[in-house]
Amino acid sequence: MKILLSTILLSLSFSTFAIDKVVYGDDNRLDLFESKSELYKSLAESTAAMISTSQLEAQKNTETFKITGYTLEDDGVCSDARFAKQITAANCSGFLVGDQYLVTAGHCITSMDDCGRYSWVFNFSNKTEEKKEHIVSQSDIYTCTEIIARKLDRGSQDDFALVKLDRKVEGRTPLKFRTSGKVADKTNIVVIGHPSGLPSKISDGAIVRSNSNKVFFQANLDTFGGNSGSAVFDSKTGIVEGILVRGETDYVGDPVQNCTRPKVCTESGCRGEDVTRITNIKELMKL
Image 1 (cartoon, rainbow, N blue to C red):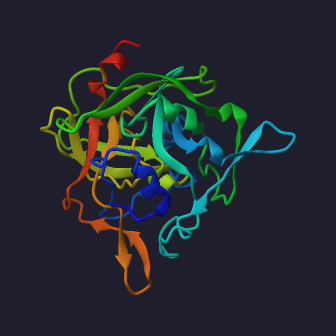
Image 2 (spheres, one colour):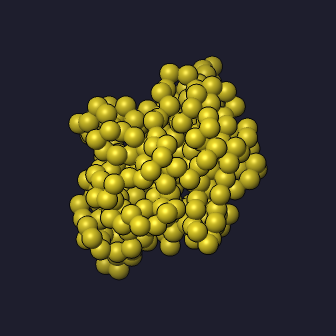
């Protein structure tokens, strides 16, 4: 399992079958300002980070909040690893599916207590440059007030949650999602979320690797703990095909530098990353 302290502590309250994630082949993760795809950057606007409300520090005389946290390097990741000096604050990811509804993984929202302890924060990203400090508007911060649907099934491994936010989300477009059938074999896909709790990352260059399971499909997406709940899109259409929920071990030890770095698999190697099919959420289809 992931050795980052903050993620380990969080995972104690989650289902133990929500395994971490990994890099396949080249690391395709990009900050928003690094991406050349206007489609992907547009989709990223509807991605939210699940952040402990205690990590949102109100700024004096403004309606803004500072996101607080540690860097990956502080948490033991090798200093020369990608994004090691960026802040890590998000525990999970989510995405907007209606003007007041958000989807995430079922192991991210386990009860209404989680709705009280965590906020859903949009705009936790590096849009123009790599920032050391992240200030977000109060209008970017939401909480969940109701769990419309949730499943965390050890047998089928179904894993999703649909929640209602405290108010309508202004200025962001709900994502379009598949409503019937299933993604085609070998479809090119992209994931957008918060790997290792980092500011939003776009990661493309992946395909649907295994598509036989009725509940989820597997892919070679470069994802990490914190990506749980991320939307997985058809890279051409921008349609949501599923929710990132499980995968391979994130980090491995570097005995020489006495730190950890992302585990790397071949494009076809390791177990693959599990993506809950969006069509599993029957309540979502009725919105």
